[in-house]
Structure formats: structure tokens, C-alpha cells
Amino acid sequence: MSTPTSGTTAAERPARRPTSEHGTDEKPVLEAKGLVKLFGRVVGLRGVDLRLFPGEVLAVIGDNGAGKSTLIKCLSGAMAPDQGSIAIDGKPVKLRSTQEAREAGIETVYQTLAVAPALDIASNLYLAREIRRKGFAGSVLRMLDTKAMREHASRHIKELGISTLQNINQSVETLSGGQRQVVAVARTGAFGSKIAILDEPTAALGVRETAQVLRLVRDLRDRGLGVILISHNMPNVFETADRVHIQRLGGCAGVISPQTHSMQDAVAIMTGAMTVPESEQSLR
Amino acid sequence: MTQTASDAPASAEDLLSRKHGPAERIQHVLHRNPALSPLIVLILAIIVFGIISQGFLRPQALSLLVQQMAVVGALAVGQTVIILTAGIDLSIGMAMVLASLVMVKLNHDHGVPGVIALLIGVVVAVATGAFNGFLVTRIHLPPFIVTLGTFSIFTAISLLYAQGQTVALDPGAFLLWTGRTISVGSVSITWGVILMLILYAVVAFALRNTAWGRHLYATGDDRDAAELAGIQTSRVLLSAYVVAGLAVAAAAWIVCGRVGGADPNAGLNYNLLSITAVVIGGTSLFGGRGLVVGTLIGALIVQVFNSGLALAGVDPNYQVLATGILVILAVSVDQWIRRVKA
Image (tube, rainbow over all chains, first blue to last red; front, top):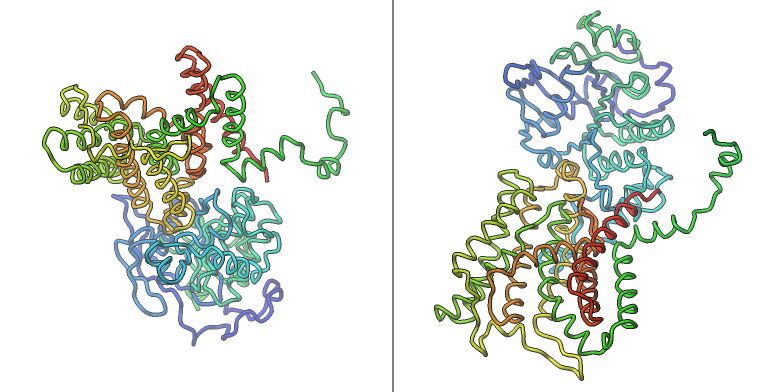
């Protein structure tokens, strides 16, 4: 089956991809080849390939222990693969820390919400990359430009259409779980990054909050980011993702399109009850 | 026992439109202003002791009170920075004793000029902080254990170095400068108090206005989250202990001026008082929440209680009792404030 150009879900997202649907002329923004990671005798990853294109949501699913987290850690710089290469925009990179990954344009939102609860929303958006004052106050005294940070944060939040966050000076701990997640996800789009990795962004969220976070995910995609979405929630994955990368036993069991495969197919592939021939995969 | 329906709120709408009660509103205000509750306690304490203790409100008595709290006040700055990282420093008083002994003995016993002796003492103080910080960040030991160990180590070194003897400085020594007073009318303030206040101002500025301060709060709040956000938390933690070392150095100099020398047996009390001041000042022992201004107020509260009770002629043991009750009350209030709802 080739990739159809329209489907039930695709109808809801008009004109989201400026470039061609088949992407033959498109270059992946992130490309990982042959990633291997061993933990002693336990195989975390057994040579995984992954390609992410700009302006798409690539979901990564898999059973527990399938290597999802290891894969994500390798891509976000939290862990170095034992073998294999990672390239961003075709240029090979070595990601030795999350900071390096971030500098290379990969933003990650972790399952364990990387926000500081006592700090306000603006401070959280700018955590670890604060705007300094100009001149002596900034370079020697390392003074912060709190006003600029608040203004930028407030503009960015508005751009993303997150109306529920009214007060940028509110501390994050006074927000609901969904709003906190929105802050964490909003941070990925705030710094001109190319790739956003979201690890279980909707776990522990209510229905409406989940919808809000997923809307934000689609918004990041529409702004041209490549988004990797790790989720256990199949309906969420099939509602949001353009392609689905299925991990099984440390390897990639196949990449499918929600338009050609059903959730049942995905579960069958995840558990090994079904295999996907190369021709049916959605590798782009 | 079954609850009757009338006890429960009539409907969800009633619950939603329900106004915040006064307790909830107070909780919110205190949550937003962590230094407010200690400030209220301080003002109340001053009023109460002004009424019950003869001469408590006289300028001389208040001046003395501020001079007496300068050593604990300076140490408590360092303690605040460490507690903000969700750590604790049980060795801070003994580190100060060690540093003051080094200053005084170098100057008095070995004839090293005062300024040089002071600088060497500062180096020793910073080294004690850096050593604690090294053990916490590189060997990954809990701060409680590290500083419990270094508390004994610094105590032993101090006692061995001083051979258990108190050392007195010669009158007019440079190190006594912190004990000299400036008088305006009947108010007299020592240079030590001014040094302490400068320390508060500098640390308060750094915590509030610099990226370092922001990172310190984030690290104390949730270290894993801070690390994932890209903060090098090990460096932040180490810097907190080094800053505490600088506060120790200031306290060591202030104590020289205050007691006219160095006493190797003085540390334990200062240790606990510095923690007390921080906790009463509204800084959370769980990290990430608190202000040095609160600590200054906390140190003042402890001193107001001690001086006030002493002036009222109360048995000194009741001062200790009062401090204990204050600490427990302060932590209870902190716990209550932390449960604030959005």
C-alpha cells in the first residue's frame, strides 16, 4: 500500500505540510542509523534506524522494555549509543549531553516533567538559558533581564494560543497537570529548535488537558518542527501522528502510517503477532 | 456514622461559587510572600517583649541585640543558600570556629599581620565549604552525612590546633575591627553588623537577579528537573557550598571582634542557631523556597526571644525552650503553606 494523500484524520489538518506529501525531495531533519546500546548483557537497542522529517509527528510506540526510552535518551543526548550515527540536517553530530542536543536544535520534554514548580512560567520557559542584561550588569554581574523574559514568554504563549495561562508570573506549582505540561511543551518551541521529543506528554492528564497538549503538538508540527511523540495511548498516537515507529525487543519492528494500518495492526506488530513487509512501511 | 446530606455542600455549583475562606486567603498571601509570616512574628515579639520586659525597647538594648545576632546572622546566610538546595550544613559553626582560630592564632601566636591572617582565614573557610561541596557533588553523599562527618573533623582539628585553649587577641588588633562600634546618638552598631548586612544584600541580590540564583532555586526545587532543563546542578551545588564558605569567613571575622579572640568550644551552638534562623525565617528544608531576608528576620526573632526573656528575668533554660517551640511552629506553618491550592 502506498501512502494515500487523504484520510479521515488528514481532513482535519488542512494544508499543514508545505512540501510534498511523499517527501522524496525532502531531507530528514533527524536521521539515526544503526543505533546500538548495551547494558551489560541486556540489549537496549539492536541497531535501530529512525528518520524524522520537518513538519511531521513521528510517534514511537512499543511495549515496556522494547527500547523506547533508550532510543529517546540516545536522541536527546541523555545517553550515548555504543554504536551508530545521528545526523541533524544531514550533518553527523555527537550528542554527549542534553545541553549539546539542545544546542543542536533538539528539545526534549521528559515524562518526569522537567519544570521547577516554585518558579514562575517565564522563569521555567527560560530555565538554563536566561536572558541577561546588556553590558556590565549582564556580563559581569550576570544580572537577568526579567522584563524581557516575561515579555517574550507572554508573546510566545499567546502565539501558541494557550489562553488558559493568563498570568506569566504565576508559579508553576499552582497550575494543573495539563497546564504544566503545556508549559513544558511550549518550551520546546520557544528557542528556534528543529526537533521536539515529547516523552509521554499526555500520561496522567485528563481528556480536555490531553486535547490541549495534542493541539500544541500539532501546532509545533505546523510551525515546521519535526516532532517525536512517545506514547502508550494508542488513540492519541493515531489521532496525532503522521507516521508510527514501532519498537519491539530493542529493534524497529516497522514504521507504519495511521492511514494504512489500524490500531489493532499496531498492537499486533508491537507484540510480534504480525510483521510489516518493507513495501507496506511508511519510511518516506 | 453516616453523614446527612445537609452536611455536604448542596451542589457542585455551590462548591464552585464558594468564596475562599479567610484561612485560605491568608495561606495564599503567605505562600506568595515567604518572608511575611516571620516578619509578623518579629513585630509581635517586639511588641510583647516591649510590654513585659523592662527597658527592652531602649536603643541601647536594641543595639546590643543586633550586635549579638551578627555572628549567627552571617552564618545563617550561608546556611540559607545550602538549605535552598535542599541540603543542610551541620558543620557551619565548627568551620567558623576553625577559621577564626586560624585568623587569631596566626596573628597572635605567629605574628602574621592582621590582614594576611584574615585572608588565610578566608581561604580556610572557603576550603571547608568547598570540601563539603566536593563530597556532596563528586562522591554523591547526602549533605546531612557529609556535614555530620565534617562537623567532627573540623571540631577535632580546631581542638588539636588550639590545644583546647581559648586564644585572645591583643587590644587594637586589626581582627578586632568588626567589634568596633559606630554610634549615632544612643544607637551603636558594630562594623561586624554592617559586614553582616552587606553579606545579606549581596546574596539577596545574587539570588534574585542572577541566573545563578535562578538555577540554585531550580536545583533545590527539583534537581532532576533542573538537570534535564540543562542546568549543571553539580556545579550549582558546589557553588552553594563555596558561598557558604564565604559566609563562614565573614562570621569568623565577626566572632573575632565580638569575643575578642577565638574559642574552640563555641561552634555547636552556632550550628543549631543558624539552622534555626533559616527555618524560622520561612525557608523550606525541602529546598527551592525561601529568601535570605526571611533568614535575617529569623535570626532577629531568635535574638529578640533570648534578649527579651533574659531582660524579663526568666530562667535561661526557657530561652532554649522558646527557640525549640518556635522552630516547630515555623516548620508547621511552612508545611501548611506548601499545601496551598491554586
